[in-house]
Image (cartoon, rainbow, N blue to C red; front, side, top):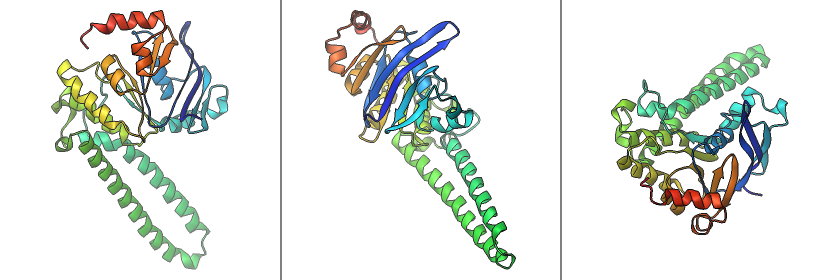
Length: 291
């Protein structure tokens, strides 16, 4: 079984059916490039994969486990959807950094909030144990719990900070940890956004046109970082208009048009010998375009 399997995803907005039965699979460590003209459903598909939109029909399997089934309404509460979302990281077109926070805090914020929630749960669990203990043992147990909780909190903080520093180094921005977004170039902001997405260790990292908001001279630095992320442990889905990037980095390419997968295959198959007339027309139109 493939690492990621998407089966019959359909999504409408009012009477406009945007996704018309999307199915595909992806192996662990592979990079999938999704290409196509605007309005073809690429971004909607990515938002559905990240549970920012919920498809009306379809299933999603991850690592052999059914993560989502549109027909199981009771299994898709808001809390459950938020938990499912943690399996995916999404880098947006427009960076979406918090302007009031430093680079370092932008990267650590989500991890910190999750760690606080985990800490509160551990504290509550400890309180139950304390209440159930004999009265003569509670004082000693309380002191032991206080020490353990202190160690847990310190360990969480240390792990979050170490990971953030490692990610900043990975995207080449170690010297910008205390800078604010307005002090960065567009390319640097996008690299921070990539580090932020990686901070939660998602199973699949998704990019929605990651260079579309950048000037041409800044595009290369972001694409270089994305290329550098490719490894056997990093599974990525990239919606892109950068044809050369898709050709050179992707293991698998999907061409979407009018809400369906018009063509899919290896880069050699899709770019070198497309069978669909729509694919041929799209590639011919973009062939001489300076991306």
